[in-house]
Picture 1 (cartoon, rainbow, N blue to C red):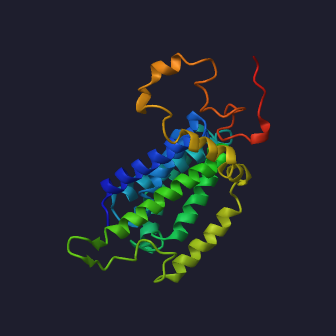
Picture 2 (cartoon, rainbow, N blue to C red):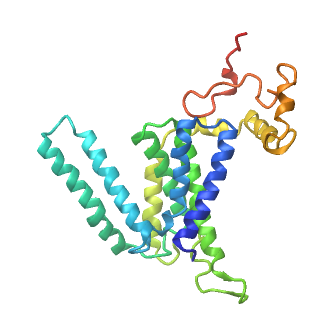
Picture 3 (spheres, rainbow, N blue to C red):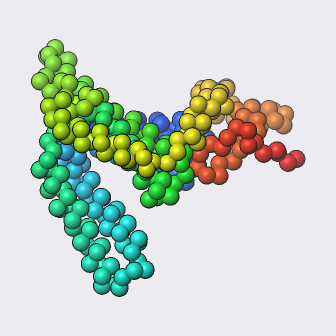
Length: 277
């Protein structure tokens, strides 16, 4: 299997490439691009959460403890006294970081259900729910973050499989096939539990219409095709020539009728606002 620095490095590169394409397509507002990119980086290390005493597992449960403790604190701020809220905040933090972590590792094992496509779907749906319901992000942004996490997650599984092939010694290690699988074939109870949880989470996820309409928009793919390569020389080598062009000539890469991003995702094509001269 690939080690932690490798997963982080490759996950960051893949997420950065996705962020570049996303920004070029105007699919997300600048203030949201960091949030969705972090989801991709998180997905690139998430499958190793079941590796006991690993850095991903320690960081994951520490982060979950902080997240849920403050979620409890903010949701109950008007109901209890300061002393009671501090007890609830600290209790939630300790429970998630230590008790929930101990229970998790008692019922899980490495290269189990978390190294599977089923886990990828489950974690992506949870991401969409968290970004939409808890973080208050736009529905399109929530599903975009879920997509980033899914690609980061898949990158981790593929890397682990690639590291199971010893190219120099021309042999396949015993771990081959244990990372990239549909579900955990050895522990069907774990797979059944995760499949049930996946269906339940899906019922609470935000609508997908905005995201699907945007990702299938012809305007989006046309704009990406136009911006794929520079029109003249690379890195502005002909910037001085653009300055001498007639008015309107240098703006051909901007689609006509393009809208400013208001909610964080690409607005419907039909909602183009007229330009004032």
